[in-house]
Image (cartoon, rainbow over all chains, first blue to last red; front, side, top):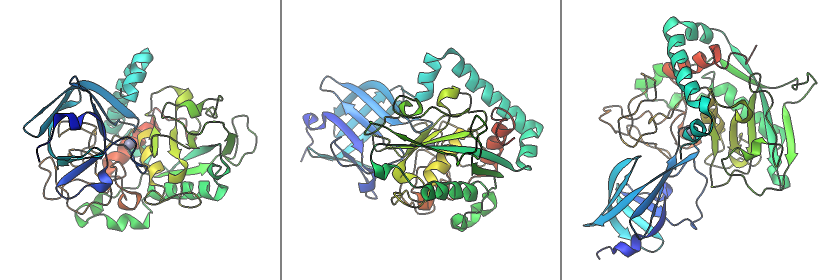
Length: 100
Length: 289
Ligand SMILES: [Zn+2]
């Protein structure tokens, strides 16, 4: 089933504990995440703006703003932290899976 | 925003300080001063500030002591699990020659057990140093003489955070989530072997993450004997785990400065030990004297 752009809107936080060998899993902020040394996350706004967060050099979360695009099942994230493309495997309302 | 970038913007001297720290670290390693420091045992005085709202957060003396024991094993390469290091890196398991002891004298010279206990009304703390003030937490003991460790209910499911050398004295030290502190009491798997504090004290002694805090392979942790690595590893990886064309041995994910579970991290390298001792010989030279 093709992934709709609208299904991606909002915040996604890496739930690495659920990763498979070929998959990376993201969850919504209300998911009961266990403690971690740091978590990567991104927030996709309807208008294409992006906020990326990740562990900083002393483990305090860092934040960068940028833009996102979605085309051919590929989610492109661009911010001062770098540019990357995530291949979306599935996008449910509470669970996003990308190719590792 | 990166915490140390935040500091560099709010505090004019901070970036200059960090650059100065790197210059002094390089000089100290090149001149052999760091090596002389490592040949001498350094004993760091520790104060643990327990900040609690609920009684269960007021962790026991035994739990605090169990954490000090872990630091003393890990920074002397006496941790029995160092045998997990793969054969190719066994010779890189390094003794930092640093020991830790709860302070026996407070800043006024009075006898102490090295533990302060503060009741707070805060249900949790953000990683914004708010536990380091008398309003809701406890102010540090002088950072030149003590390693300050705050143990509290850190929010955002974060296990801990640190401050590099060269930052403001009034926030210097490390912060650890109570359930990730020590090996007893409220310490909970998979972070119940005291390795969060080992990792954070590594930062406090100027160590960077082993993947160098960049997306991809372009960064450096300023240590030559740790392989280039793309990003953090988590959980309990299987050896070898390859990234950044670092085969055949791959990532040194069993290093304390990766993000794996407590049971999976077992070593510092000689390059990391040199950086820590450069720090103790110089910018944190007041400790252990
Ligand atoms: Zn860290």
